[in-house]
Length: 121
Image (cartoon, rainbow, N blue to C red; front, side, top):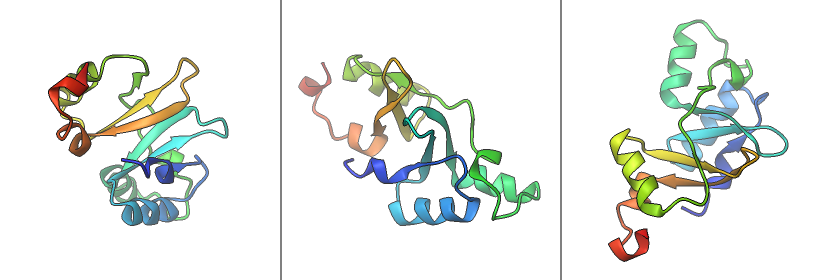
C-alpha cells in the first residue's frame, strides 16, 4: 500500500480529525508519530470508540485514546517473518521501524496475502 504516509498523525491531532483521516484513508487505523516520525502509538476506530465511551471529548488530543504499546517490527527481516507474525497475531497492519523507531513502512494484511511465495524471501 503506497498511501500509508497519509495515516501518519501527530499526537496532538484531535480525536475528530483522526476519525476523518481514518475514514478518508479506508486503511482502518492511523499511526501516531512525533516530528521525527518516531512511532508513539496506533489508533483504530475501536480505540476511538472506547475513548468516547470513557467520556473523552472529540476535541481532545488523540494521544489520550491511542494504543501506546502497539505491535511493530524492525526493518531488515525476511518478508516471511512479517507475514507469519501478522498471521499468528491476527494483525491487519504492521508498522515497520528502523533502529531509531522511525516508521519506514506499514505492511497491510491484504497486501501480504497477494505476495507470491518467491517474493517472501
